[in-house]
Structure formats: C-alpha cells, structure tokens
Length: 88
Image (cartoon, rainbow, N blue to C red; front, side, top):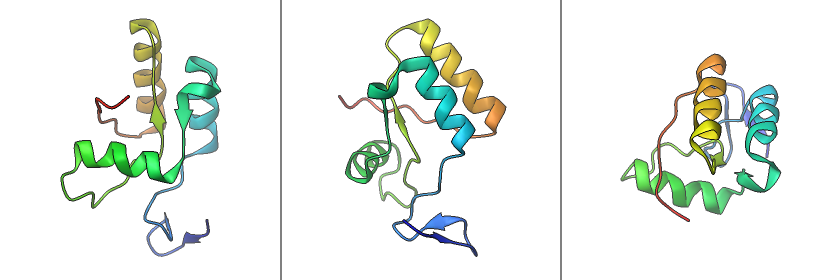
C-alpha cells in the first residue's frame, strides 16, 4: 500500500504502523498474535468505531496480563492510542 503524504494514511485508510512498534509488539506476543491484515483490521475497528471512520493499524492479541501490560507500555512509549476489541 502506498501512503498519502498529506494525511499520512495509506490509500486504504489505514495509518502505517511505526516499524519499531510493530517489532516490539511481535517480540512481546509473538508474530502469530500481531496482524496487519486489512480485513481483520476493519473487523476490529467496527467493534470500536461504529462508522469505522478510523481503522486500527494493527490487531494485537496478548495472552496474559504481563503481555497486556507490555503492549500498553510499548504503545504508550510510541505515542499510539489503544482500543480494546472483543473479537476472536
């Protein structure tokens, strides 16, 4: 996907994830628990934003409270907001 320099969003409406944040999240929860699949991101976004005006940049599935705490810390350090979603 190519980015729109005026909005820093990809053409599909998904903001790119900082590479260092993605790497940190993969290190925390494992690559199988971090997804940037557009269909999955849109599904997760509908759970948070009813009109899906914003689309999540990643879906992350921590398995433990320690992983959750580390994910929150990494996102906070990167200046990225979190939203919970209850989809499997």
